[in-house]
Amino acid sequence: MGSEQDVAQGTQENRPGLLTIWQPAQDNEPDMFKKLRWKILTPWLDSPAAELFCSLEKVFSLSGTPVAKDKKSVVFKISAGTNTFYVKRYHRTKGKHVWLRFSRMNKEAENQLLFKQLKIPAAEIVAYGEEHIFNKIARGALITLAVENAVDLATTAQENPRLMQNRRWARQVIKQVARIARTLHDYRFCHNDLKWRNILVTQDEENPQVYLIDCPVGQRWPAFLLPRRIIKDLACLDKVAKYQLSRTQRLFFFKEYTQRKRLIAADKTMIREILLFFQGRE
Ligand SMILES: Nc1ncnc2c1ncn2[C@@H]1O[C@H](COP(=O)(O)OP(=O)(O)O)[C@@H](O)[C@H]1O
Ligand SMILES: [Mg+2]
Image (cartoon, rainbow, N blue to C red; front, side, top):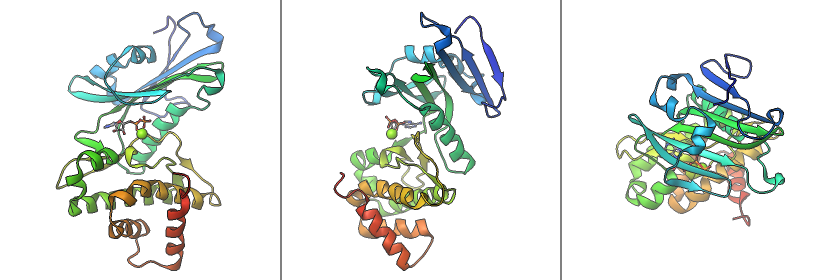
């Protein structure tokens, strides 16, 4: 941590219950160009996690086996005390133009917190923050508590096809995903990356529970832009659903989503739009 530290609580920037730490620059970058913001959520302040994730610097010194990786981010699992956490780290890639241009970690954390407010099950945020250089985000991290016994839907379909083919299990999962999509869309919020890999499901044969993760580009939309965004979310879900689920199951999803037992003319138009959305783009 830096030599000076300003610990602000409950400011405009923060929502209540967050501890924010602004840290000055720590290496040879001039202070005026570099700023660190790191938040640990209050419930975790007195836990071993607070020590493990005490700063962005510390989070970048941790290592673990990657569960997901691309050019600009890595996700790995790590344990502290009795809990397991998922650490997602973003870093600047070569060339100024590929710096992250918006506050991805902030948005992802805010959206996860919003899901909780909307009573949508979502992975619990433990800590997050970013380092800004010249007002651009150079690197960032987000820590979530691992949802116990949960695997994302895409991996479940690949690695546990027996569960996926269990009609009773699938029906419960479809119902929950439809309710989540409905709740988001009623709030005029679209996820914008609602793919099976971003939906966790507990591997419980009798009573599966669905959770949302990974929503850095979700937002609310004005009414005139909303329909197209809604179609995108539903088309995103259907990308894998069309290979993994039967037509009856997909129709069941749609009816659960609209909360209608019979399709009306507008529903049929919407289904056509969903089916056409990614056509020629996959
Ligand atoms: N809190 C969590 N609990 C359980 N699994 C998780 C959690 N967070 C991430 N994962 C697993 O890690 C994968 C990658 O995480 P994600 O946040 O979606 O990163 P990416 O931006 O790389 O897609 C997910 O698809 C899921 O399998
Ligand atoms: Mg993801």
